[in-house]
Image (tube, rainbow, N blue to C red; front, top):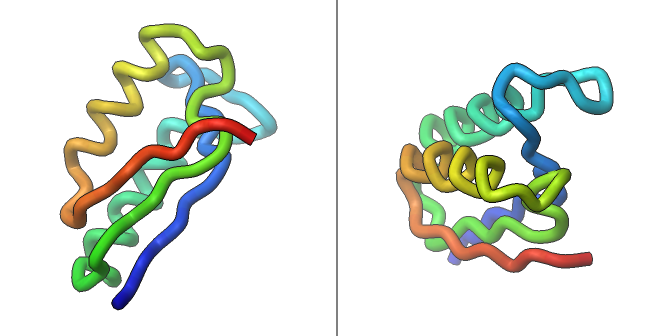
Length: 79
């Protein structure tokens, strides 16, 4: 069984630079990588801080990004 864990996404507003990077773009690249190289995974678990500010828009962006994921996923927010 293959399980992927992605942690502390800290998603912010679209096109916003946080910690020196566009975290929305980074998540998109992560999802592309999983889809291209690990589509045989049983599950992908997203843990830790899923958004940086906890705003509804950030969670909506997260939901939109994860809709492209080819493998089943679960969210386990928190520290």
